[in-house]
Image (tube, rainbow, N blue to C red; front, side, top):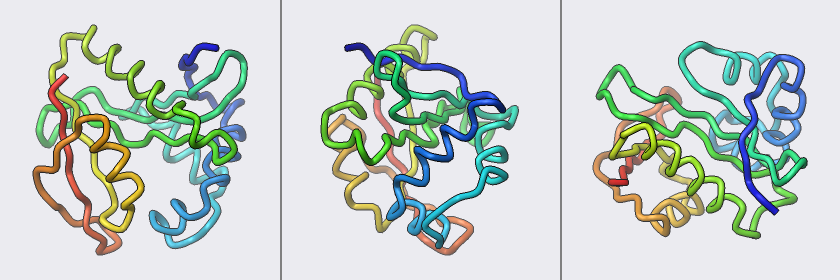
Amino acid sequence: MSIGFEEINKESLYIALEITNSNRPYNLMENGIETRSLTEMEKEFMNPETISSFIKLDDTYIGVIDYILENPKDSFPWLGLLMIHSDYQGYGFGTQAYEQYESAMRSRGLNKIRLGILQENTKAQHFWESLGFVYYITSSAQNGSGILCYEKQI
């Protein structure tokens, strides 16, 4: 079994919606509601600023990854979202997908990755810390929640 990426397009957006809506606790933390709409998915994944892909386990769509190669605010690559469908969590697929992503960033000549975690998302904090990410500052989100900013040398 191997992990790979496939670009999200308008025709496959409904799959991203299904993956996102399988993670109701995260949606509640992030948006204040348990489920998202196709229109919200289009806004999030069909924009020119980020690269949005499915995480595939062989031929099965198991997650989504969304990132930017150079954030105009700090010129660093930022990983905006790595989400595994709730049915596939706990099997190491998130770690494998991240390792694939990190390898791709290294091959582009990049040497640092940054990401932000909702302050109340302790599960994500533990996950990213276990992969070597280090906290460096807290910023505030639009909804008033704190965003913990992490980075990793790669």
